Amino acid sequence: MKITVTSILVDDQQKALQFYTAILGFVKKREVPLGEYSWLTVVSKEEQEGVELLLEPMAFAPARVYQRALFDAGIPLTSFSVDDIDKEYERLLRAGVTFSMPPTPMGPVKVAVLDDTCGNNIQLSQML
Amino acid sequence: MGFYSDQFHQLNGELYPKEYLTRQLIQARHFMEVHFADNMSLAGFAREACLSKFHFIRLFKTYYGYTPHQHLISVRIREARKLLSANQPVATVCAQCGFESIPSFTALFKRSTGLTPAAFREQAQKSNNR
Image (cartoon, rainbow over all chains, first blue to last red; front, side, top):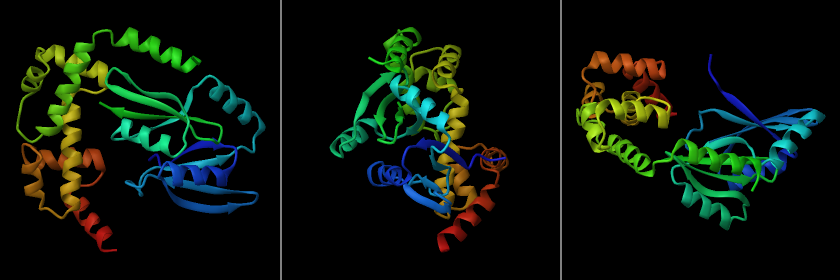
């Protein structure tokens, strides 16, 4: 058994695709029409055969409540690793991204939390 | 300050109160990343952290969630994947990455990737030629 797909809930799939590719730097892997929505995944540019991130539409109403509660508490929905968090932070700030937590060390890791503009806090982490 | 940020700072203070220990462990981990092929013992890496071998192993596991030995193997496998993808011979990769022998390299590599080094190299070449 392998982990090939993980997902995040997004309020608008096309807006999410734009943010996750043009701003964060992921690459679109699949877009399969499924009625009103699509099976839309992105992958890391460095690992294009790696785990796919599904940008999942919020067609299930209670999901909005869950997402909103996490967002309001500042809790990241998921986390991505980066090689140089300070450099990424500066790059993303220049691209207009909003952070609720700047790069902050916690023992052997440094993390930052950004707003993905699709209803989620996303954590970036660098193992020190 | 939100809930997450509060929890983060509280945990940081509770879990990592001794900054010098964090610095020593980070330094030792960086040292391992550079000297993974040097046939150095864990006691040697522990000396880099100015800690006894057993204290080093215990703290490393607490801080990173895996042992220094697991980390060393993981770094060696990561480097081996790069060299095999560049079509380097298995024996060369084995020696350059600090594995003790080809059988031990093969077993550890297969456990990590599901493929033997030779099969991985072949698959990488096919993929590169596409």
